[in-house]
Image (cartoon, rainbow, N blue to C red; front, side):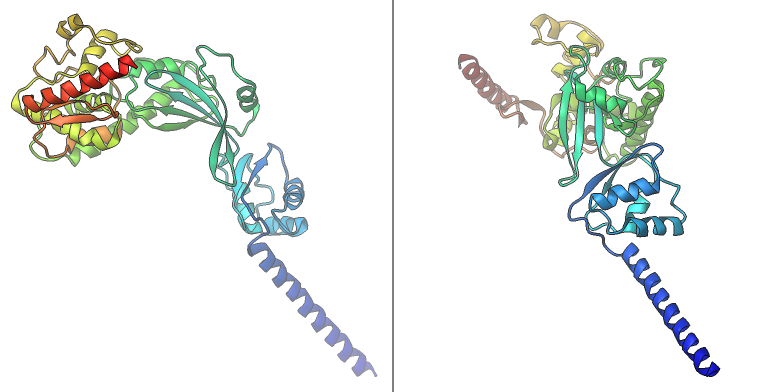
Length: 384
């Protein structure tokens, strides 16, 4: 009898252990396998949030199948108390393990609200955008000029959210004065810029910033980025260029940047100026004349006068025989590369063609015909 009882108890214990093992295996698989999300979602983790509240919200939003299992998995992996504040994109089908990793990994927010301080050639604007998880594209919710407009409600709300991302975006062709002046309106930054950066030394790009960053530190990052771009392009330059130094390359790149907004034209425009320098011809480019008038402080806002084309300034390439003494703007990477690896052409002239691009020519006669076509286009536009 006792043997039978002992045998039954042992059998029962084995069954219990087998069932427990099965439950553990099921739990592990459920924690690791793809989850129920049918579309990406943005999950906001507030400062001070705990795993219990997050698991309840994720289960309610259909991101996980079991809140308790989510908490057990987070605790077992040692991440239960490692939640990071922010807004994070959780992709469709993410497993519980993947979601725990996303919410505890840290780093910049990957979704939610973004404020972009866009520094443009003709104006600067502040944009407020929200990431649409379904398309992974930002949707603009507000846009304003900080120098002229009052801050709209979406911007004020974004400024109060601790997980809002902030970026300073420089357009290609802005001047150093424009950058420093525009940074004054970026309220989350502190301090002043010690000295106006040398023209051309700031890399047009997008820079993530955070509350309390100094304006000087942002400028330093821009300078370091441009130094790296210029050093690489100079190391990979083609032979036979009439450029003695990286600084001269930067000057030419800035002229290319201001002469064309058509990406496909940059290397061709670069070839025109290289050919002119090789032949001892003056560059004769209007943007250099404009820089001699404005010194990069704002936009001229009108056409050039004949007297200004003849006026002697260090930058007027209708008067000087070579490159101006400094860049006339901050060129982007593509323009720097165009200066150091231009297209192989015999062009020495170009003029606007009415489409936003330019007509190029090897001879003065051909150029004069292109100029006549452009003047006809201008006249027709003025008459309409």
